[in-house]
Image 1 (cartoon, rainbow, N blue to C red):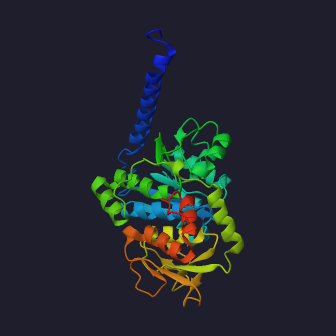
Image 2 (cartoon, rainbow, N blue to C red):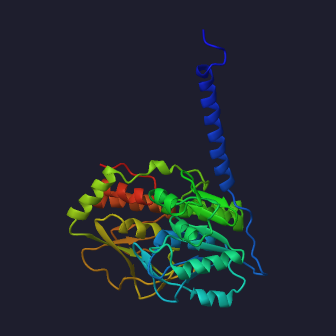
Image 3 (cartoon, rainbow, N blue to C red):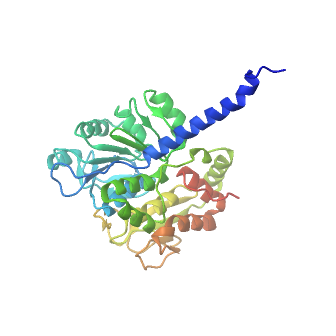
Length: 376
């Protein structure tokens, strides 16, 4: 006869208690990250001042454009800043001109920004960027990283002793590189002190909406979310649903070796185009390893809806044998005309699946931690 409190009888209860505790801790993390405190303009400003940082040599396109557009829609004053007041290469496609360099921003706003957005950059530890981030944090700015912008924030030493997250693919590398940070999985965004970090590229939408709610209130954030096809922006997320495994590597190898000739895809940027609408089609089209994506416009400079200067790669008439993607508000002819911002991402992925193959659409989606179409 077993003793009434033997190890065998205690184990199920112990496992249940541990599972319950883990679940409550996870729920606490999500609930704690789901809402930032109200963000008010500081230093007598009429509007919240947001600086979206870009590295001139290369800055992830969706990480940059989405928070820029969403926070402008929420009523913030949003400025694109870079180490140099020169062209910024967006990665993997697109180009912009920043409003000012770091020195110009400091001269115009010596008290610092209210919010600083840090996208993923091709060099995570650029000295000019990390130094400026430390200066902005010291002035009291809320520091918000998108995707692997978390590594730049960590390089600046601003995540030491804090909880944070980033893109699923870099998790193990971040743990080794920045051991003083508590890196979390399976969460869209994490707020700890004056820092907020977010997971893969597609987290740019929910974390930007969370900030929009903090700036403009729940009702306005819900309006912006609905326009862009979202009905919630919580921190709930399953990073482990995404993986670059054998299937994805096989798709990548097939596209790289046999995907010739490359499909030429032009994302049309018309005057007044939404920065948010532009982001995902440009990013999706450039990540197939089977196509080339470029920004297309009527002139050398195009002004987007909230004042960002776009620098098209191709102007005038579209070359023959190219696919032109038209975004909401553009009535020009194209291979795909996306009419509705709410379905824009799904429409673009569906077109990629039809044009370049369902496996390629799957591969593109995985890279951005976006709901994955079934590969064939």
